[in-house]
Length: 100
Image 1 (cartoon, one colour):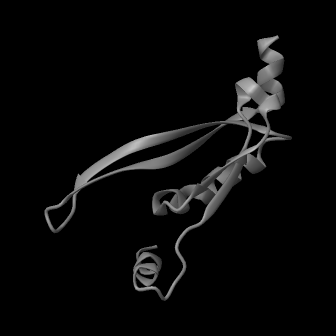
Image 2 (cartoon, helix red, strand yellow; image 1 turned 90 degrees about the vertical axis):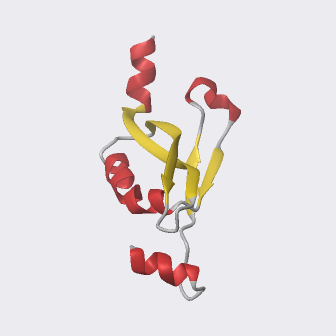
């Protein structure tokens, strides 16, 4: 992954472009939304999210959060950013059946 990041920084390789379609669980009829993420941290784990989604029959209920990350890099500069985190909770249909 570090080689890919460096190639993207140099303009000789692609950067992440992750598109996630979703609906709000509490207002399903509102329609679909889309998260477009370019986070390397999400690119590193998106295959795990896809694997979890593949195990769910039908639409999945997920939790999307933005996690605060803060660290000091090798140059002594403080870096702060928010990284998207997607957690697959299970089947959407099972979740709404339990609420009834």
